[in-house]
Structure formats: structure tokens, C-alpha cells
Length: 419
Image (cartoon, rainbow, N blue to C red; front, side, top):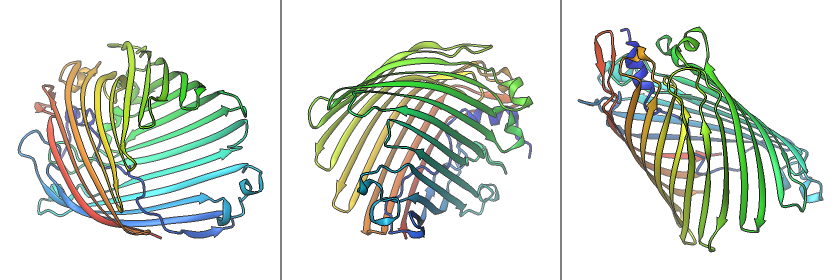
């Protein structure tokens, strides 16, 4: 079955699918690989129901699902665990590293062959290497890879599997006893879709950033940061389809505590997209987060942000976002809840998508996660997620119209063990 270009474009305009994002709930003692290096493996299984496998706007297809998760973390050690016990002798370590691999396999339990064809493997990898981390001048390189999976938003035999690799190199200057520190960073992101019908969305981003921090008081910090980038399509088809840009942005901000229980983080600035063709962005950037610790084991946060980001198959999207979150620890039970509403506007959408150059969405999402630690190495988990995307945008291709609106619920419960 051939997937219409416009339908694929409408799908990738929406939210991402399966990806590995949660931190380990429990961690075992690990396996000693060498002096100063420990391997931390963990496994887990989850089962539940997804209400809308294909992200359809009408007549959604539901399916039970089983997910198998395996994680491996390799890290240098300090203290009693290894030879890198230089801090306890008064000498800071000269090298630190961490590496990890996460695997998430999803199997759909359905009699519908189009549903079972969506079985897939999401992969996450990460690597951190730090040189002279406690010195006045320190260096670090971080690399992360994520293979996320998502069925197209109509019944098909294909997934919109997407490979994203981000590498960041940075140098920091932090003189001992001084209140001012500074840093430079460089980020490279390669974003590739695996299916041949989605190559138009491939892109690469290079961002050069600078930041200066000033610790004004023990609980107050001011900062200034700026970045300049180069974003373009990756490959012949993508460079023809994707308008390149050189975004420039700068912000000032502060992190502070009003009281022992109330914190405020805020930043404001200006950003310009500088797109080579089509509609451009130029406007204010703003973010405000207020946190309140209502008990020793509970915290509430509310956040508002106004920002813009490069879009996969348009020029950019700008959005107003409001988020509310609660974290609560009850003995061995941990609860985390988050709800968000976004007013998102895509601009500069290529005419080949067939739905016009603009698209405006209302996106509502909510999630609840709970975990119960049975032993230090064993935990039970449960999660509920809801996503609602509402838009009047229609993609038209090869005589087919696709509405990318959808309502999707996901309920999962399982168990994880660390060794």
C-alpha cells in the first residue's frame, strides 16, 4: 500500500510516538566490569491498552499491547566502588563517563493484521564524557540517540520510525570562589525518517550557544544566553522541500527562591528565524515556572512559555504552553502527574502537503505515573496518558484528505527489576 505524501506530512506534523524517556525507578548494585567501572542492567514488562493505535480522527482502532524494556547503564565510579576514588583523597577526578542503552519492544495483541504490523523496537542510547569536571576549565561531550516509533494516522503497514542523534560539546569556565561562570556549546542534531515516503522531512541542525551565569546570592542566580544556528534539509529531496534557516535568539533570566518552599524560574528574550523562503518568525520569547513545596515529600509546579521551534515539514511552529505538575512521595509509593495545554501554530507549510501554508492546533495532554518499590531492586509501575489534538487543517494528496486530529488514551501497568 502506497502512503500518500500529504498524509505522511500531516502525520509527522503531530506528536511523536513510542520513545524511551523514563529514568530507572530502581537500581541494583550493578556488575563490576573493571576497576572503577560498573554495569547496571535492568529489565521490565508492561501491559495495557491503547485506545487509538493509528492516531485516527474518527473510528479509532484500539488494541491491547505488551511492552518489553531492557536498560543497560555503564558508569565510572568513585568512593568505595572503584579506583576513581580521587575525590576522597582530595584530588578531583580528571575523567568521568556514563553510557547507556535502552530497548523498548512493543507487541500489539490484535486480530487486525494492520495493527500487529505496527510491532516495533524503540532504541535509546546516551554517552557522557567529562574532562576535568571539577576544574576551573572543564570539557564535556554528550551524545544521545533515539529511535522513536509511531504508526501512521490511518491503517497502513508502515510506521513513521524516526532516528534522532544529538551530540553536544561544551566548555565551561568556573573559577573557584567567584560568582561568575561562563560556557560555550555546540549542538549537532541529525533527524532522519526511515521510510522512503518520509525522506522529505529529514533535516540537520547546528546550534552554537554561549551562556554567562552570575550567582548574586546563595539562592539567586542570573544568566544571559544566546545562540545562533544553521538548519537545513538533509538529502536532495529534503533540501528541495525544506527552507533553510539561521535562527538567532537571546534571553536573560533568573533562578531564585522567594521562601524555603517557593521557587521562581523565569527568562525573557527575543528570537528571529531568518528563513530563506516562506513565512518567518520574529518575536518575544518568555518562560515562567513557579514551584511550591507543600510538604517535605510533595511539590507543585505551574509553568507558562512562549517559544518557537523549527518544524519538520513547515518552516516553524510557535506556541503558547501552560503546564501543571505535581510530584508526591508516600513512603515506597511515588506519584507524578502532569497536564499541559498548548496553542500551537505551524507556519510556512510546503504546498505539496495540500492543506495550506498555516495550521493551528489545540493540544491537550495529561499523564499520571505511579510506582511502588517492593525491594531496592524491584518495583511495580502504572501509567495513564491522554493526548488530544484538535485542528481544522486537512492534508490532501492523490485525492485523499486526512484530518490529523485525534484523541488517544494509553493505560499501562507492569514491573521492573534492576541488578
